[in-house]
Length: 319
Ligand code: PA5
Image 1 (cartoon, rainbow, N blue to C red):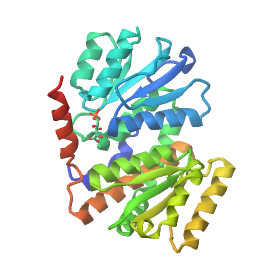
Image 2 (cartoon, helix red, strand yellow):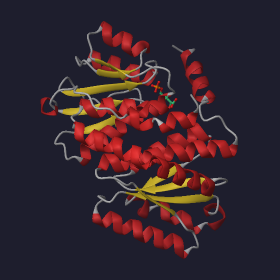
Image 3 (cartoon, rainbow, N blue to C red):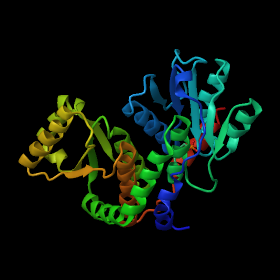
Image 4 (cartoon, rainbow, N blue to C red):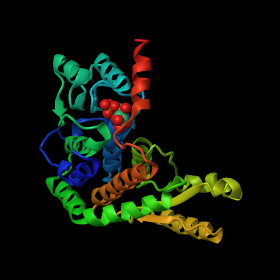
C-alpha cells in the first residue's frame, strides 16, 4: 500500500471497544512508550487531563519509572513492535513493583512477556510502521481510560468529512515550509500535537522541527527573534485550540502580532471539530499530509527510518 492510500485510511483506525476498568480504581495512570508509540500515551494523558480527571495521568519516555509509581497505578506499556528496550525496561520494572502492566502492541517481546506474566494485552494490526499505526494505538489507549463510543465516532467522522480539505491544506503548508526549519509555537492544549508534528517531520520528511509552548516561551524563546540572520532560517507556525485558557489565547494573538511587526507571516493552525479529540486529530492528520508532501519535495522515502534502526542495533550489542 502506498503512503497516500495509507493516510487516506487513517480515520478507519479510530475505533471504539469496551476495554479497561473504572479509573477511580487507580491512584494514577502512567503511559510508557517511545517515538511513534509513545505519542499515543502523550495524547491519552493530555486527553485525560483536559477532561479534568482527578488522578495524575502522565507519560514516561525513557527507561525508568518514577519512584512513586506503585501497584495502585495503571501502567500502560505501548510499543508497536513490542521490542523497544526502554518500554520493556518500564514493563519489567513495573512487574518488580507488583504491577501488572497493560500492554498495547502488535507482538514482539512485550507480547511474549505480558502473556507469560498474565498481563492484559491489546493487540493492534501488524505490518505498519509504528507512526502510521497511531490511530490504532491511540484508540486502544483512549478506550482503556474511558473514552465514550460517541466521542470516538465524532473524531472519526470529523477526519473522514475533512479528509480532502486536510490533505489540500497539508500540501500547501508543505510548500510553504520547504527550505526552512519549521518552528511551532504551541499551547498547553496543543503541545502534544506539536510533538507529533515534530516526529512526523523528522521521520517522514527527514526535516528538523522544533517547538516551544506558551506561555513559557514568552519568557525566553522570544528573545531569539532579535537575531535576524538566524530567525530567517525558520518558518513559524502558531498552533492553538479554541479551549485554551483565555490568557493563553491572548498570548497567541500577541505572538502573531510581534512576528508580523518583524515582517514574518506565521502559519496559524487551529483544529476543527466538536471535541478536543476531534480538533487534535484534525491537526495530527494535517501533520501526516504535510510530512509526506515535504518528503516528496525533498526526495525522501517517508517510510524509511534507517538511522533509528541502526541505533537500535548498535545499543543491542551492549545487552
Ligand atoms: O516511528 C517510529 O518508527 C519510531 O518512532 C518508533 O515508534 C520508536 O522507535 C519505538 O518503536 P516501537 O513503536 O516499536 O515501540
